[in-house]
Length: 315
Image (tube, rainbow, N blue to C red; front, side, top):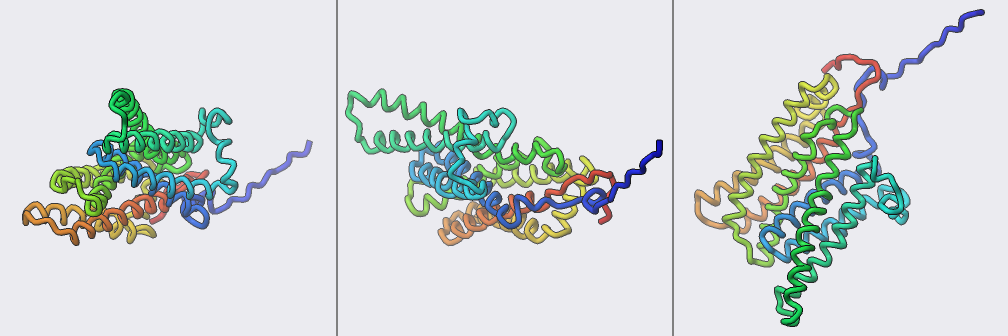
């Protein structure tokens, strides 16, 4: 028998780290927007739920239902078939975090809508006295369930990415934690914005909580980057792209400066000066929100596939 020689054409993506573009370029920008609004809505709803601020809860619900869900639907290509991705119409939830996320978000939307109605009725004494105990029980049940599914709505984005083994920078259990803590910090910033419009917010207490959240965020992001640097050569390459490469401007200006440094400085300044400034507060809220967009952009932008043929990347 004549032996046949099989030739393999080596492509660049087989030996070089290749950046993913599906979720950050072209139509993939919709995924970026959906993930940002998912974190913002989750954080604002949970913070408002803890503070019992009805307007904040309503704003968080609107962010998820009117901003996060539409962006996610339009990314699907055939948005009106989204119901095929949630139980009981599919078994994909057993293996797909995207299907689970659609389910979490849909359930949250329904439960939170009921909770917003019951809370509004109770707060404005619009329930007959004989029905108050039942409505109060329903309200508390909806608060617990809606809060739980709001957390799942915010955290599943991190799990979607962390389960991607082909991209080492994402493939870590720290990513969902970073997204949740950052989302809660975003919620603390947004509730101050809501308070400026509706009132009924203890700005001093929220500023103190926001300071701790920002400090914890800075520590978590640093830990995440250090962990990624030692995880693999490809993950280290992602870190280098983040701090010195194509995403460096978005990281240092958007995440570090606007997302952490500016809000923390304004918060500390207001405590030492002992004077509340609406202008500085608005600046802090805007700056923090820009940081939320920048964080997700950076993480998605430096998601780099591990090459099939291992080779240490050249910086």
